[in-house]
Length: 359
Image (cartoon, rainbow, N blue to C red; front, side, top):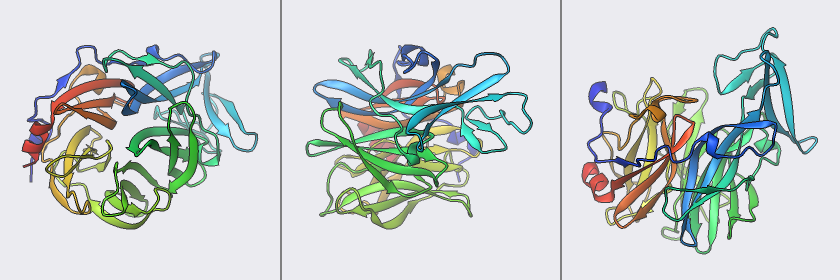
């Protein structure tokens, strides 16, 4: 067993951008004048038409009009409208102890609602951010927001899977497609509650599509990674356990998929996230067999990245490094990651260093 002290170190030479965080809430224009952007984080990434394209998760909320007010926003599927709801901070039964939620006797609300926004860059560091969302919550399964997009290119179509939050069931995984990042077609729910952190492999393997996912056991409190198969990217089955948390390691609290897996000579490399029991979120690697991704070849004993900088330690939800995609170019793994659930950071690490560490 690895000690906790040894766990929270990285043996890899990870180079963070000097401009980190490269995107902050202040850089993103609210979608409405009466809203404010709270966080921008957990972005999908792809290279499109020569540019680095990020699909940002933008969390925003209505501005409070006075000191005793707290407000939230959600999609009302009955009226088909984005709806603002206000509460008195002093009302009986209200709970504001967790920055992510508003607890009321009626039900639990999220303190903000997330949508997706496109950002583009020529150099991968300096981004131009669209002023309006590219995807918004629009149905009963998305009433509390859409979160954590992951982009998989298969043939000429970009498949975007994302988490949808709602009082109907909880958290589901949904799928959308696009060819131009201007128009998006929502395909609906592909994994039932509570299942998130889905990462779709970018090609068929022996005639099947594969995806890693993270179902949650409400009864046994398990948060492990599974692997599933599909003939068409819509219907998923033959679900099998892949890997679990590890007692005494950096990922003994929970684990989940992060980046879309990518092919290397050694196997399919998945950059995944793991959290310790005291909620420190790090990134690690796991290598799957090229011909049979249900088989694990090796897995990180130490994290690739862990929260070290102030913007990774302090924020809306601190001590978090979490990513939804990477670019692998010229032997470099380029990681765009959410920092403290508030910012987007950028870091580079040599692919061979990760593979050597896994050996």
